[in-house]
Every structure is written in structure tokens, then in C-alpha cells.
Length: 171
View 1 (tube, rainbow, N blue to C red):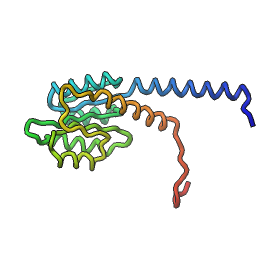
View 2 (view 1 turned 180 degrees about the vertical axis):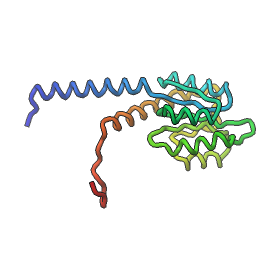
View 3 (view 1 turned 45 degrees about the vertical axis):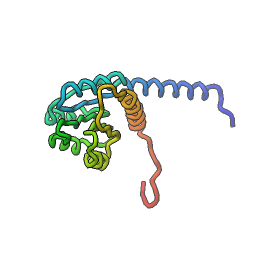
View 4 (view 1 turned 120 degrees about the vertical axis):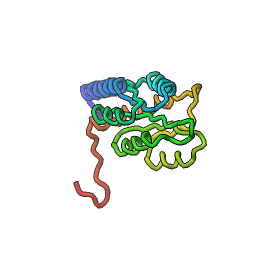
């Protein structure tokens, strides 16, 4: 009925170990920033670093795709903003491919006022859509939330969390 002191201690130790593992996972989470504008890419990378991500940058969608296959990060930030107001097709194609990967957070920085682009991004299932991010935007706090979410996802996957089958599903 009551836990023995030994069990409490082991539970506390397990809790401490889980917290340390989560902290370790959070500190090693990778984030890739992809965009054509070096200035904006650096702005987004700096915000991601401030939020605790280990950041990789790429200006080339093809090179980014190869890197994503080689070393998949926990989050991808794609800067689609373009002076024309329309995202470059190469970046949109990469976003579509990346959206098919499981357990990957995708943040898209899009063109302000482009409702069709936002609808497209939401249909991809992106975690975050930011239209018209400007230099004084505080996106680091949003990227911090993403890092925490990615760490929880990774922890659950590593613990091989088992959910009981739903109705009509077999074990």
C-alpha cells in the first residue's frame, strides 16, 4: 500500500536520470536554417542558437536536402521570403519533401500578405508559419518552445512509449 523507502529513492533517482537525459537531449538538438538571403538566414540562425539549438545553415536547397538525409535535425527553419513576394520553387519543393519526414518540426518564414502561401504551408503540416519576419522580431522564444517540444518527442521515442491499440487495432 505504501512504497518502501527504497522504492521512493529509486523513483527519485529515475526522475533525476530522466531529467538529466532530457537536458542532455535538449542541448544536442540540431536545427537547419535554409534560405537564399544570407542576412535573413543569419538572423534566423542567431535566434535558433539563442534558443539553444545546434545550428547548420544552407543557402542551397539541393545541398540542404543532402545534408538533411545525412544528418536529420530535429527542426528545419525555411526562409521563403523573396522580394517578389513569391517563394522560390526550389525552396517550396524542399519544404514539400521535408514535410514528409516524421518527427521533424518545420518552421516556415513566408512572405507577408501572401495568403495562398500560408494555406500551402499549413496544408504541409508545418509546426510554425511566420509571415514577414522582420529583424526586430523575437523569434528566439518561439524556437525555444520548438526545442522543448523536440526534446520531449525525442525522449518519448527513446523510451519507446507504448500506447495501447485503439478500437479495431490488433497488437
